[in-house]
Length: 164
Image (cartoon, rainbow, N blue to C red):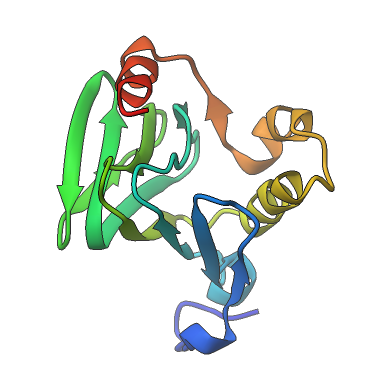
């Protein structure tokens, strides 16, 4: 296991990349096993208007969004925001949030969770659901395990429906 005093280099070409979601990809970069629990990091690309995560919150970790390219629509509590290339957003624990690419624009986003969370198996589960190899109900059943607690939000539902 890595510690906070040991450097970690992850080459993009070495990252496990999940590709089953028709809306984009997820590159798994660093998790608690490789960072000593300090962070979890993944890079996601979203095709124009593609949904990312529905409204949810985490009880233990803050989530940092760094928009590397394109535009990302984000719900934070009950406010909608558009993040553009270079924008950064930090969502503390217990704050409901959701995200997806802006209609007509792709999005390339680096996500960092601190402290690190075991989330790679969650992303792999999503990939299996998209491949038809897992039941979508498993996502809801995994909320406590992956600290991904889903909530309902009418504003987000309306905003994303309007983009269709």
